[in-house]
Image (spheres, rainbow, N blue to C red):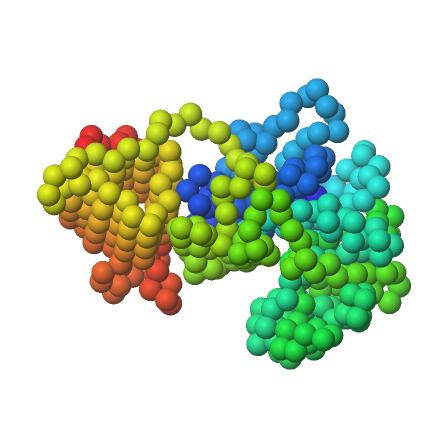
Length: 406
């Protein structure tokens, strides 16, 4: 069960027209591709994706890239819209979203239920977490990652004993208790859970009847189970991915804000990136689009198509301009004498001649006019676009348009 219904308000304006899991990432992917790839690469093939807010583009992405076909009936990736099965309310929280879809458990009778979020960037072999869960004879297992104590107010923090059995779970505490034997660090929940199906079913039914509950796994449901059933914390730092080097292991980013999203994209540019998209033994899957190769044209002094320290997706044309330290999505057009630096340009965006762009996130179908400047005069940019406190300029998605000639 993949939770893909969040509003993603902190990623606005990128989430103005789409759900957070459908936001493009790394040039050709969507954020949800990470959790789905992790599950499929871990040989988990029966996947329901629970959607709610602005889900059309997400549903279309699942249709284009994640259909297994009808030969194997237990292999599927199926979007599940909010259906108000338990009343007249939309999902009231993460636990309520699963409660309203308990019929899916009845339909499939699983031995184990994995409930994962759809809005993080990471690689994970879920089978290793399942092995931990079975070895401990756990009823619930929570995936966790160590964070510094001073960061505890940003996460759900879990207290454990020396055997990693959970003894406490608190959302964003001002002061957290450190991990046993690891000074200065505490365990943060990654929002990924494994459940015994019957424990899950009973807990959801009980939680649904509590008027004081916010119907959230981290705030309500799991804390209520700690004293009643064995709940364990799986340490993500022990997870290993075939084909990845030590430098790539345990990479996890919560891209819940514009700045975090930007930094995670920028992680891809390095010669040895922290997140390796080129590991053929653990492929990152996505929808396939029939695009031509990228090309770089003109080789004249002052008019040379170049891209340095950048990620360039299929269909891009860098026509006599310079791209530096940036990530370009599909079919981006950079015209002559233009400059793009430290930026993310999404599909079908276009940079006009002599235009300059730096430290910007430009959504799909945006045309930056000839001679315009983005990221150089932030006061002017604030009058036209969204600008973060750190000075990132974000331009919302534009209308579909015909590409100009070079």
